[in-house]
Image (cartoon, rainbow, N blue to C red; front, top):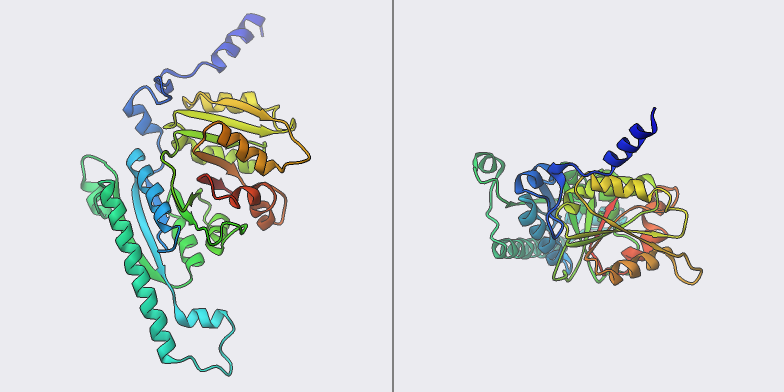
Length: 328
């Protein structure tokens, strides 16, 4: 191949197609092109009624409005019999009817509170209630919401339901913020095959306008970028952060990949230190850059639980400071 041909191919490789070029501020050149690029049309939010529930609902509704997506608020009522059975209470233990009735009443009250909060937040964002038939018949294709409640094990039911949504939003309550995971978060990440957005109890003023990506070259990091593309194309700025020298060799390819989607990302290398963990270094860099969301894959080694919730991921989950988009 002649050198001039090689040069011409090299020049074209970095040329962003006209259909995905961005306007000032980072957005695609036309609303039609942006709509074509967006793949997130359904969002499942865990509406537990706990301390982090409202923060998760708030984030889900914000993204629904931005992406013209449908949000389903999903609440799981506790099954008292199953709770006692899982706790080992069975043999030689008579389950009182009064105890069961009290637990059912508490579960019903919590479900009513969760639904009321979901409705209030959806109304504040001007999101109408629609079912699938109404959405199909609607001409505007605008955002919408729906509600669903089931009884059983939350981790199992949310993980099963999550398989049929494009994005899952779960809360991260202050009660468990110092823990590496919760059963529901763990189950959804491991079994749904879907991206999970972990929301702090108190959402920030902005969301997804300045996005940081934690890159280490792993398959999990590749998948995290892939599933986050619909969110990245609507961001004003995107920053790819690496820690140490091991993950910087493929950064040009990462930036090229994002550029083909109209995303003009920047790279910030962070030197590795012996005094701070990789997770803390990533968080500090993201916060210093003004990021309002962090995208990352599960870091670490097998077994899978340690890969998801050990090391870097554990450090970042334990802070609860930034909305975190995780992909296993």
